[in-house]
Image 1: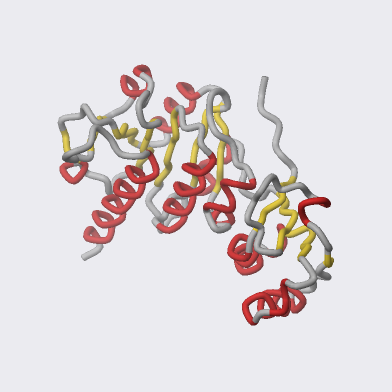
Image 2: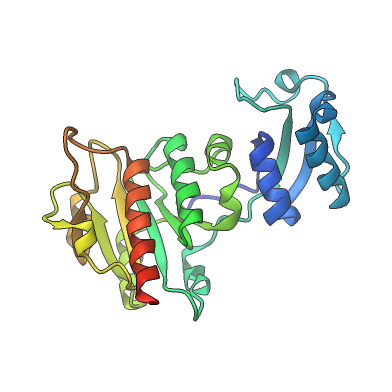
Length: 253
């Protein structure tokens, strides 16, 4: 059964709300804040900016009673956001423009929203067009993930895959190469050509990437480390994205 699209999501904190005001104000359905939020310069600046964008900010006396954010450090402000980040797999090709090289990330078996949030932020910073997530056994975008990303999810797309294997086959037909980042790979990440149209697969620490996905990959690459058995998937992702961006920048000189 296909996953239904989440229509909207509450996001919490100064940076996520400010990021949506800057990048995607059309996605904001409602903004609420505590009565004390605008008493400091930073909060007052955000409220003035929101009002200039045409928003009527609602003052709420107690977030914990009204919204029950389960202990979230809300910093006195929250917003209801329309889901503008989710895209159907059939529409993936619309993200590939003539002046950009396709760059996608797939997370296999990653279940922690904190990891997803960190990965979203890194991906948004380094030119990834979309993050692909299997519908089964995978993390989904939550308020916590948006908060950790500091609202950077407004800058890229998320695609849930009903059939991961078929999706990989279709991406290959589009001319996209599939690389799996896995510790046992003999080829070091800086030895691989990352300037090509690329789907980079990362797995959760411990279990790693499923065998079938490795088998379907065009190449297996690794990040050599010492003193530790493995890196957190968020750390591995940041290193891999940076190396990809470095190679692609060098190609233009």
